[in-house]
Amino acid sequence: DAGITQSPRHKVTETGTPVTLRCHQTENHRYMYWYRQDPGHGLRLIHYSYGVKDTDKGEVSDGYSVSRSKTEDFLLTLESATSSQTSVYFCAISLHNLGGTVSGANVLTFGAGSRLTVL
Amino acid sequence: DAKTTQPTSMDCAEGRAANLPCNHSTISGNEYVYWYRQIHSQGPQYIIHGLKNNETNEMASLIITEDRKSSTLILPHATLRDTAVYYCIVALSGNNRLAFGKGNQVVVIP
Image 1 (cartoon, rainbow over the protein chains, first blue to last red):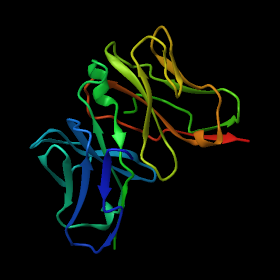
Image 2 (cartoon, each protein chain N blue to C red; image 1 turned 90 degrees about the horizontal axis):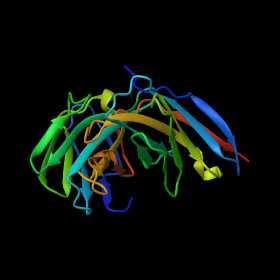
Image 3 (cartoon, helix red, strand yellow; image 1 turned 180 degrees about the vertical axis):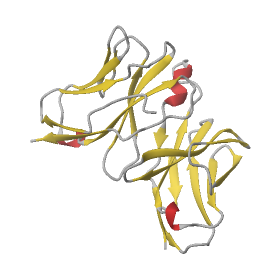
Image 4 (cartoon, chains in turn blue, purple; image 1 turned 90 degrees about the vertical axis):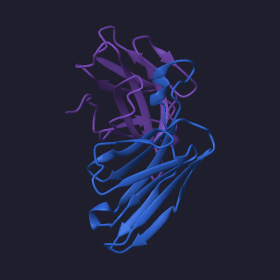
């Protein structure tokens, strides 16, 4: 998707190993998000960021940490991957205001996804 | 607790208008209605949002009932490329914690 890149797009790893997923944006958007998507659960928010070094937890944050040292990059880290973290991970970005309305903060642009398999 | 209720799935005829319903009977006065869709294997895509007035853009129209307890997303001329899971979401502006739910699997049939 234009302006937002996720890497890697596919990764297979073993239980107990650390994994970092990167989300890079060129849109200078304030907000960045990490979601995971699993069959039967839909999209669930892991963490989000509302500025450099400003992050907050979502509904499924256990086992994940994030960092945002620059506006353009939002990293998702699995310190010790488990099989339950096998999933498709989506990054998203949004403006605080869109068209002058704060409702635009919920207008998200998503990346193409990163498929992670933990064996 | 789900804030919106959508059909699990529905079929639509290619070339015809597709009307996708959503119930949000517990919506509060300052919550918006957002619609997204997700085509298979892709990230979700924003479609449209509204507060109480009907809205239209190049993708779709959003009709919100006067009591705001339900809404309908209208795809004016459905194409095969509109086959996707459609999510209806209710959230406060600036909420930043959109809950996507399981959505409505819409299949456009030739």
